[in-house]
Figure 1 (cartoon, helix red, strand yellow):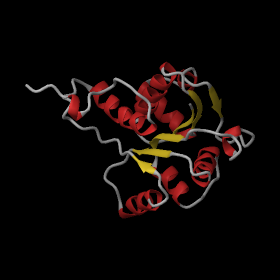
Figure 2 (cartoon, rainbow, N blue to C red):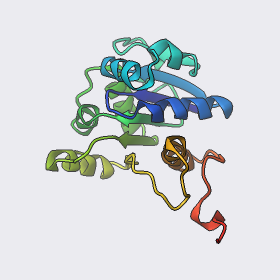
Figure 3 (cartoon, rainbow, N blue to C red):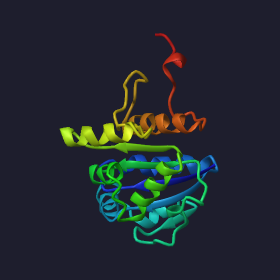
Figure 4 (spheres, helix red, strand yellow):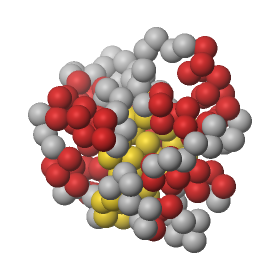
Length: 188
């Protein structure tokens, strides 16, 4: 499996880091792009750097590397995950505004009818945000808001992160043991 993973400037970069960790263990070929704002959020929220996350990916591209293979429809992938996805990135995708390679890769993913999953991380949501999400949902983009459930009785933040990442992995058809589904719940 070959996936494009993008990390943008929304809070919640821990989701992107965890996704990369799991995909690496699953031997999924990853093509990573981190936005400039994403780099700043990584430093702030993870006390880490872009280079720390680069180590988790097979290939890494700069935001303005228009020679990157991910900007071409002839480069076959199994899809793209933007985790977390800022409202700016979401709006750019919804309106075909491809001024960087994250937006262009998403545009290519859409036009080639490949799986595009976005994990928006914003609250509260404005009507503009919701309209942009509806626009994308109507284009078969899967929207997985970073809203963990609690039925799996999380013991800490890592369990909440794993719930959201597990949902994305489920949608990609990647088996995992990050969380137990409702049917696997043990009665008390």
